[in-house]
Length: 471
Image 1: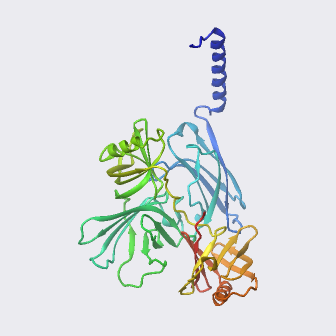
Image 2: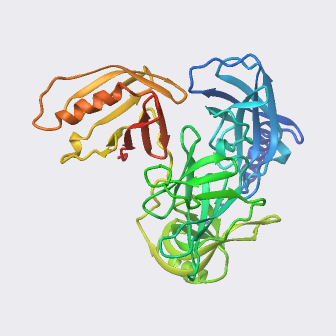
Image 3: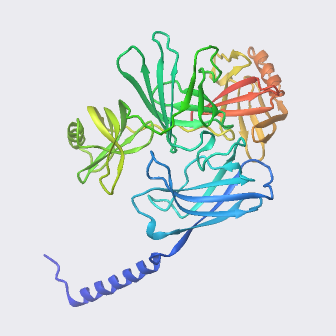
């Protein structure tokens, strides 16, 4: 039987509506009112902040991955003192759009020379993010960089160059680097038909001297950062290639991104006549153009029998190209489906590639001196963990467990009082002794992607570790 709404129901509904409107009025900022992002900024190095330092934090619109960020608010603090640095960034609430993405960046300059800077995105305001933020800045190598750009200068940027090829005149490289740590790479083999495109994520090494690209290929690509305008390709061990041939990519005068065409996997969803594709290697959320083979993709998704709007794994061949925005003016990166392959239920994208942290990661030794570390049992592989608080190192030499202390200052590192158990093992004792001897010579470190290298005082590699797989 249908419910009959009486006068009391109407009155009650009106009062509830008035109460809701009053509550909403209290919670929303006044039109045109400046409100603020509140935050703290710190850094890991145990060094004092110079008295002539200047801290700056900016609120930026980072919605467009292929364009410079728009600054929505800024604050500067002279002589901020030692961290944590407390700050507030005022901004106009009327300028904030719910369908856009915002981030806070921090930097410290000393006599106009960059000393510390954030090197990752810290989201705020929209898409579930808060208005409070905690920044962690890293120490730079002393060269002035653009805000948020790290060792590569202002981004996005394109780099190009003709590199050697074993069975062709050369390979023309075109590399696009975006501020959200995404890269596009095109390799054109001269005298051959077609291009090879790759996409994925990039990361600088801990000291800013190296660049790692992790895309669809099993092995990453490594480059030395010669300057903000020059990258030098390295071998798989991260060493310079011994050859007189050119291995250099140089920054082009203008940013001119490619439109990568390749096989892709990602989470696809269709709802309210709109499709979205979250590509697995980059993590980018791409609207799907209603062209090409998009109808076959949509039909397969709808036929999968899942609840509406639930993301499903899709495999396809496609192109990432600029298309007009569905909402608003301008263009945005969009997926154009060239060939639909399959929809799969019960699968999801693996974790995005991220560099491992030096501290708190289990590192497993793969190189000692110039020799690969070979073990018959992975449980016997030398390993270590740097514990941050207190600064203590522990691990295994391959036979015995050890523990000790360490001192770290930027890229400088020394291990001290390393002592282990005294158990005798049938094999591996020589390796363990060599490991302990190498530890005594350590003077610096570098993390590149998920690889840790320890160096002696002359900068020679003593040992190399790989981050253990989590889970």
